[in-house]
Length: 344
Image 1 (cartoon, one colour):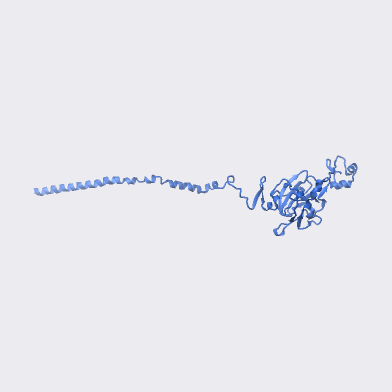
Image 2: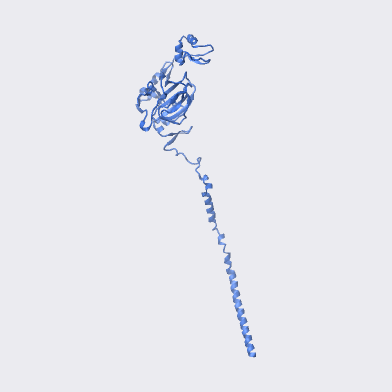
């Protein structure tokens, strides 16, 4: 029995030791695992500079967004626009910024000058003109036509020496308010008022190389730089400026110098003399006689209260019909106090 109890005690001791050893082995792994769990703190890599690329992407998206599109639009101040008008258009007058089709400056070398103030800015001496220039007044193939300036054309004063000075145009009879039309296709160069001369007048530059002037208008219906076709309305006739009665003063010029309109227009039949006009030095020969013309004195009478045509005529030794003719009035015209009448 004692032997049996001894074996039992020894067996229990051995079992206890075995359990103690197994407990020690279990605790050691636990101690080892604790440090191994530290890698769970590895969220540190996301804290490195890697997040910066996402920030850059956000900025680029803002630049590409619609809110920034207006900022990226070209600036009219900073952008170089010096070549924008090359080709079809070219600026020839900076003061008014009038854009003129390049064909206008190719018509003739002197037409590189575009001036909306002076009728003759070219300053070319006509006495030195030695060429023969063939001018096609109109071109049906290109749709460039011609038209009469008035519905009916009755001459009241011709081109040439008149009184003590040269008359550089042809005066055509009209009533105030009559329509005045462009003679040929072209572009309006001048729309101005000359109190001591043409009054309200218009100058048109034409494809054929000529320029026409229309003076003493009561109204101007066009503006500088406007394209006009033959027959388009330029304004209404009148008696503005230095004028003794309603009429149209019409001039035709080449290189700024006047040509007798009757060499181009047949005002009697209200048509062109020929479709082709040949310009020669002979057309400017009048400049010699204009320079050497003898000055003739002209006298005027200022109408006073109680004056009539008969009394004025007797005072200056002329006839009533003469006064009516040189002043373009009739015997029924009412003379208002202060009006100036030419008497000689």
